[in-house]
Image (tube, rainbow, N blue to C red; front, side, top):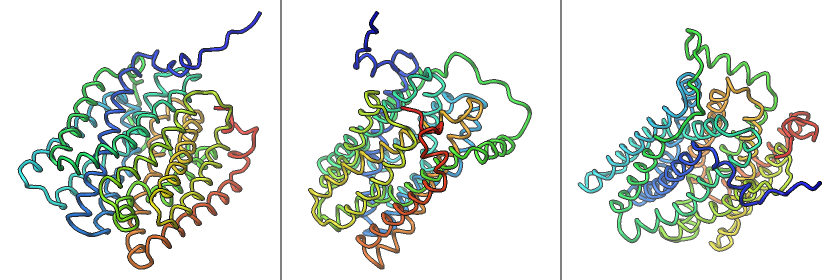
Length: 418
């Protein structure tokens, strides 16, 4: 008797058999598109209006300060349900985008107002991924988790590509106000679809009458006694500190001052990085390749830093775009397995809090951005980016050696096949 091989297309679409995912995925997609368009639109606006790379890195850093409160989002999600948090946060995104749109139409906008609103959004935005992943893990069968995470990554990777092109192109062709009409509409659509998202049949279990601080303390102790979670957190912090600043904060500077291009060129650079990530997400979501999760994330992180080093030392835009495609591929092949390692290694009762603490690693990004500003002013972009890349590569090897029993050995739980 022969076993029928599953149709690849059917297998790839399997996560959509879950009703909640049918609404969560397009809601996540609309939010991701809006995020990417908004980041490029406002980043370029601040750089052009102020002419200051310091204000640009402050803007980039503000978007991630909310990583400090992500564990509290995890506590609230564990107690009261992730979908409620999803509704609330996406309603706030839409309201703030509408505020910026109105101010732009009234010609009452300035870099200070943009920084204030970016700071408010930054308190919430890092926790969006906590809610996405927690909902996916709660609603999907365990055998579909990796595929669902890969498809979920498609939303952000495709948005980085299309949103980068659309955001920069819309500002260049029609102006900021018109571009922000699109951003606001995307946020509104995201909220309307999020209303239909479920959190898998049951209400959250009743908790003992304890404080959120107690819940966090318990979750921190849980993580500290789990080397797999600690190693994954360490790697996540490292790539946020030393790899992501080149792509999530400094691309406007590279486009304007290294490649001497405009918004359209900036969009092409952002789209190149996103295209590489999209390719990797498609590879992972297809479930056609047998990859050991932890080894894959470590090797991909090393390749990512090596490509960053090459990117730091090229003045040719087309070569830079090729390197960005490779770096985007490596980052997606690093971070999606990392999320799978952490979700698989966490009991359901702790999932929201652990993923919330995972978002603390994003704190490395504003730190990396804030350090890069004065370093670029004093030593230039090429030297600063090269030093970041070399330190990242060395520390990745050192961390792998330190946690080799838990993260590298093939027999480790973290290295179960994806």
